[in-house]
Amino acid sequence: MTLSNKQKQFLKGLAHDLKPVVLLGANGLTEGVLAEIDSALDIHELVKVKVPSEDREMKKLVIEAIVRESKAVKIQTIGHIVVLFRQTPDKKIQLPR
Image (cartoon, rainbow, N blue to C red; front, top):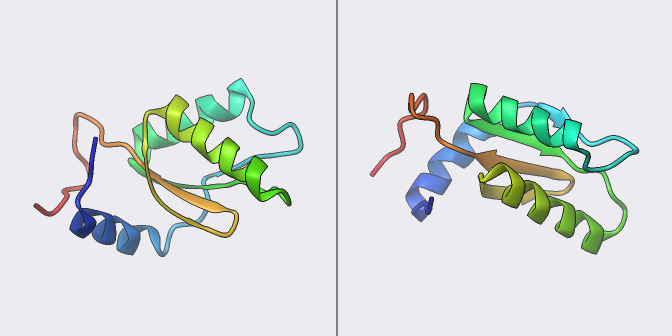
């Protein structure tokens, strides 16, 4: 799914007040964490995930893996927080054209 800049800006506005739903722990990116992200995307469509890592390259690789495995779209990354969007068949969030 590709989003226009207008749609990304709209989603950034919606995500502003959200709290991170999934926090990666000391074990990093596990199957359980991926399942939790998948479940959160099915329920909310737009979620924040906290990826605590001191190493920028490692954090970038983890975020890329999350996006790839969850089949979501990365809306933005701010510090340790990544905002993900994956539309469900219900289309709970109506995107602008």
